[in-house]
Amino acid sequence: ILLTRRPFQKASGVILVLANAGQSAPAVGLIVLLAFWQGFTFKAAVIALVLYTLLPILRNTIIGLEGVDRSLIEASRGMGMSGVATLWRVELPLASPVILNGVRTALVLLVGTAALAAFIGAGGLGVLIQTGMRLFLPSVLISGALLSSLLALLIDWLGRVIETFARPKGL
Image 1 (cartoon, rainbow, N blue to C red):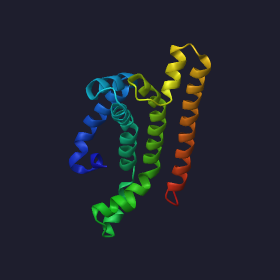
Image 2: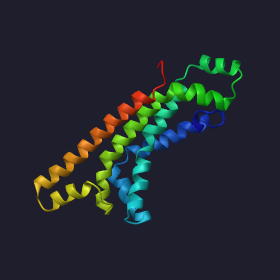
Image 3: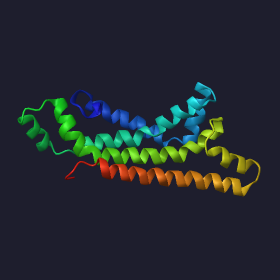
Image 4: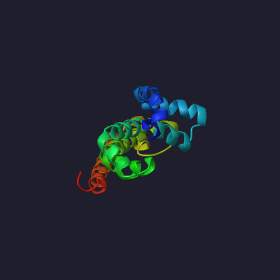
């Protein structure tokens, strides 16, 4: 939200470029690099996964807030709303479908890449995939991949349901 405000707007381009660069790096590489820095722990995997999923939320929040019609913002100011009131009562409700879409995308991306955390000993469904690969057990490998895929689809569906109910009336 801060990157859409006047004093910070110039920094938004640089921050988006950095986020895009982080997103373009392979997820397993980011997880392993953070594991070397933080230790091969669950904490390192969580930090890496959070960093990896920031881009869709950041980009969609900026796009959603910049996409709000300026005449509506001016109208709210003309009605006497403060900048904070305009943000909470006009801009965020109008931008919420785009922002929630970014959150849903980030959650699906998170589920898909969380299986890679098994490579640094952080557990998860990736353990099934890794075990199936190491021991040449296709049934274990497929069950881990299938469970991971089903979880991603479930998260996507739940995200769409939440988007539908959280969307302001009239949008």
